Length: 288
Image (cartoon, rainbow, N blue to C red; front, top):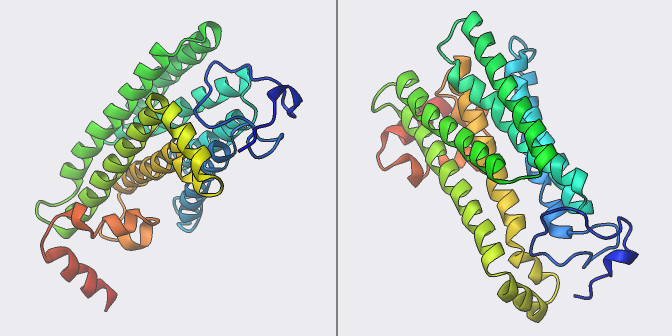
């Protein structure tokens, strides 16, 4: 792969603090990191799918608390695309902060699932204040420690509260609970897979670069592990957003096959949901 000199590129030399293992401008002078840019379409597709599902529910689609997480997912895709496209400082800030814009509405939903309107507003104001502080601090200092710790903390809190919601809003030993658990386990597994691919992309960059040069295009694209991070986290994020929305909304939690996009719908009846015939029996009865 013959890379174009960044000085001759459309966007000019990179000014971002982060620059990943993919060779800059290897495909086009208009796209700094080709695979890392295009794989962000996963976030956008799942965000649009979630919004369309809400619009099909005429009595619910206008609730901003339901649509915000999906808009946040779309924002992650657009901001990350802009960053990997240009490798500029301001687009990196957009990419970093979009992660918090996506997680904060979901965190609010799981924290206020059993709260009254007053408490929900108070928690929203607290989370909004924390988000404003993170944005200001990150932009001024360009540090990554607080940014990373706060993001991991939010994701962990969402995971813990999602488990509590599953246990409190589904019946023990029911097919519905096992279906939800199947999606939660799969979502956590693929999210963690994406994280390890992200780490390997950093740790083994020299080896991966040589391997891609030896293989050549288009197969070299398969070794762009940061792109796989986008795909894995896009799927995992969608699953947790959709599961939380499904549980908090009070809808029929047994209707998983019609409410979730693939591979969440597959995971709901896969090995991730556990062994047994109760799921298959209930699903087959619904399809009759």
